[in-house]
Image (cartoon, rainbow, N blue to C red; front, side, top):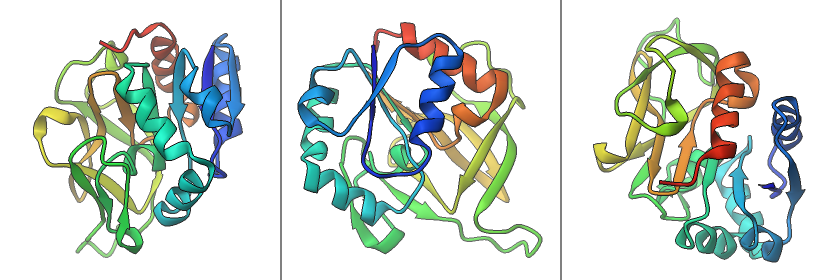
Length: 204
């Protein structure tokens, strides 16, 4: 059973529907005790870093999420869930969870034809093998909706990049924690396959 963390961020029910589509049993919970007891955790969301962190702290989910990762429970972050696992976000200068060293940065574009937020399909380049990215070929497209992107301090934590004027990290991880800036639940076959692989991943 996968537990999807509810912290009032958008898109959570879309993730559950995608899990249902590939036969993954899942529940949505805002209870930190249930999150800590989960077999696997998905930490999804669309929204702002400051409000996300405020809700996590108010519900005790920030410490629960840290405990989940420390216990070695396989965990998948999506979109805002890939940003606030870092130490800080430039969005409202927000202190985040600090599970991976680095900052979430806002796009600083010079090409007037490129808009912020970055919305739509974009090709992904895998830079380092990971079980959840198995079978993805360079150029396979995933769906993005974001104005900020994760920027880990160490390249060791970067598993895939995409390009929006310049390359940026779109998949990062450390041990049992993996996260994507793109939305697997909105990315058709490739995204559903990633969710399916997560359902069997042991976090190693």
